[in-house]
Length: 383
View 1: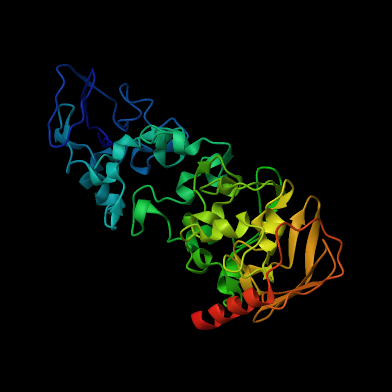
View 2 (view 1 turned 120 degrees about the vertical axis):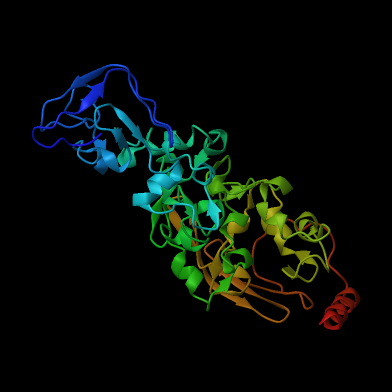
């Protein structure tokens, strides 16, 4: 296919042309076209450049010979100068020169995704981007009660390079920097709730950072595509501020459980070993959490980072307002806390504090002075 010079006649043939690398194809019947016309303005290929997105070399019929090299000026005969992806690479360069290459690219199947002439979709894609991906990728992992924003919008290439990348799964960048391309500013979730930016928190090394967050391991806690859980957490976590206690409601136990140690910190009303958050042997974790209207971990701890020890937060969302923790201090053997929920209270593991606070009945018995002293000695020995 090529543009004719004045006075020259090109013999074209009727019928279907089969384009295969290196083959020379000929038709049985010829017919001439007028001087000055081209492949796309002739009788055969009148619809080649009519769609919204047209490959540049197919736009006017004058550069068809870059891909379809004529073999006989009297007949509709041609061959490709190269095969498969090598043909495309003559203009577009290699798309498989990275560490992780998309399977169709590695196999040289460019036309599996792109139409070489024209399309109704940008980049001459055969289908809209998300629909194109789903012609190969099972859609189940992308359909759930909670869907990541880019996935819901069909923006696969916002996170993945469709050809190749130096990052696993053809990611556009390494995690967490990939996440920070969006989460460096407030984002609104599907319910209209604003999510605070986390990039500044990650970069502020003066903060006390949660271990997976400190190393940028976002995927340790969150699914990147879709899932059944609040905030795309990989395991269930109660969305509400209050919930009754059950192990399966607390994703924190995936990491914060060594031979049941942390679970016992929420299961026993009295202890001298299973938690440091206690007043004598009164288990204050149990007091806050293990009840019909218990507080979830997020009521006191920030899941990413905080300026306070133990990731204690300054405030926590509570409906349409914020509950603040105005006073918090951690000492060698206890501390003090003063949130919106109650007055400032003090606690000490070895010298229990009597706080003037109306409370619900306390289960179990107070430890004796001898038991507290043995607990102090055991802690000193561990250090």
